[in-house]
Picture 1 (tube, each protein chain N blue to C red):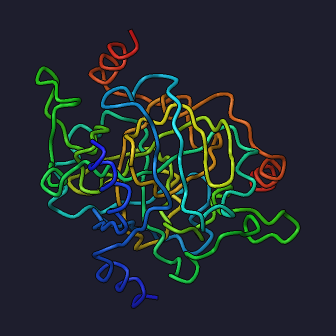
Picture 2 (cartoon, rainbow over the protein chains, first blue to last red; picture 1 turned 120 degrees about the horizontal axis):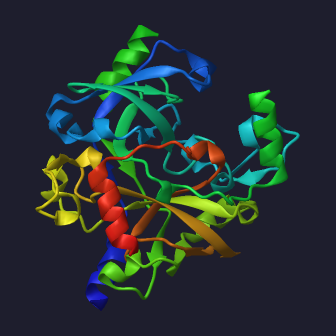
Picture 3 (tube, rainbow over the protein chains, first blue to last red; picture 1 turned 45 degrees about the horizontal axis):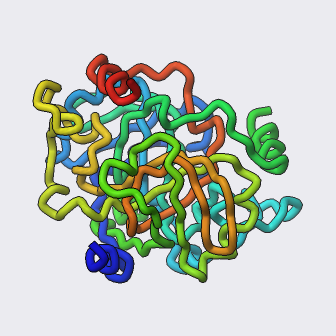
Length: 162
Length: 162
């Protein structure tokens, strides 16, 4: 067991992923963050069968690759949330910035329709052409009712929804 | 714009990730799924500053690489949930199986402590030595109160918690 463990700890220094499909949307730039926005996910045709049964879930997580983050930007360690200089300079893991070592996006969406290899979803804040990495059914084990967040975060949220 | 879009759609066929750290736990096998289990995440030392401010969040998502899934297993398209033959054969995206094209694990954990490059968390169902890919603060935009799931899923859940 110790050998296996050591191998896992020392040996895995590069992981390779292949997109399962891509996002299709007519929204441009910040429009993708608009509440209620509807997008499509076009899966590779060899992935169609992997969707079987997904239509029984109302909500799924989409994991996607934020491909607009450059190699240079992936080295970012600290940032001002949403680029706002009046907010504290924080570690990237304390924010949802795309400027992070592995820029994987994570969004909970409403699953509206499944048609062959095409999903129609509501509230996916990803740009057109974004590579999709995974789709996972959502259940209540993925949430908590007593989450605490910092004050700066609450202020940003209030600002966004007003 | 069309060129950029085409490049995104056609060009990104391989994505490279580098772990930001590893899971450390004494739990073995199915023990990692035990409710309330406490694990540590040991980040690379160059990632320590990227944690600044994270201690103000009570809950975070951990994205990890399910490295025990083999290349062969990543080709799985359909599976019986939790290997139970009495449940329907479903597409992998309709389940949370690790047998998926990009075996990225996603778990909501309670953040108990941050000490330098070491996080102590509750409810991380990942094995010792699992490479960690990302850490994201949790907020209520990541949840929904009206999620619908299939009956087979409810039965499995009831089975798990009883």
